[in-house]
Figure 1 (tube, rainbow, N blue to C red):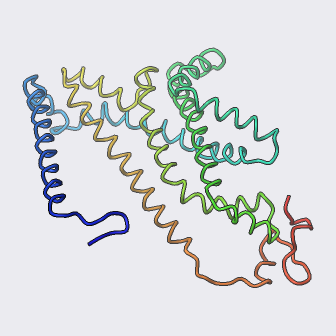
Figure 2 (figure 1 turned 90 degrees about the horizontal axis):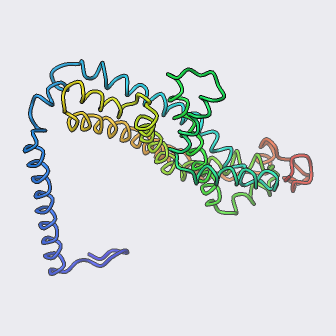
Figure 3 (figure 1 turned 90 degrees about the vertical axis):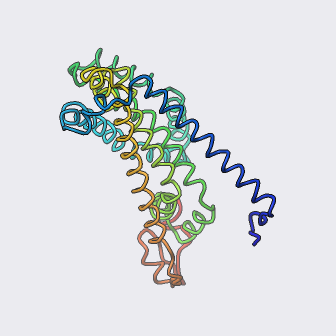
Length: 307
């Protein structure tokens, strides 16, 4: 059966695809066997190295759980600050006022071009020189600062692109019924663009969770990944086992975040389906911020008009 996107495969194409699939599976099995053999030859698969993670809770309560708490704390703080800040910066870049649009654009492009590691190191030096924050808390502040500055600038571009992707007729229709620009943004553009922006926003939140590991590697921030190094040293050269457990935890966290976003996106799309109802002149006139003229809706000449 043919499709709109491609033609149905013939007998030769089907046989060729079966051979390609079989060849790929053979290569994949060979790679898995090579990795297994290499680890086994080095003694990394010995039960004594994996035993602490399956026979007791000491490894989790002493190393993994404290590191996970710090990772989630830094990521949560960065998300809470970066999300609204990125939204404000993204909307500000769309301002009609040059004195707002140009400086905000310069700030966004500046922090978007700097590696997050440089921002973290700069933050650590800044807090050490000009604040009274204790040396124990400085790494957390530096990690959150770097994550906020970088990811807020990236989120600002996501918000701006999401709003600009909407049809121009959305804004024109809102202006035609007398909505101000701020009301158009709040009531019309943002609610529609959030659904389209959600996958990109979630991808950036996943980046925030993973980038906390940079602070552990460079700034001695005691997060999840750094706990693997400490744990492997305590239990004796089981670095592969420790990193494997930490990697699984990262996968679970990021997969849960992505799954929740997919569910939320579907819910938002279902909730925004139109009922097909037609609004009358009185319904439009009762909309907050609109002005009613003699026969219907004002063209924006009054106080509720377009600014």
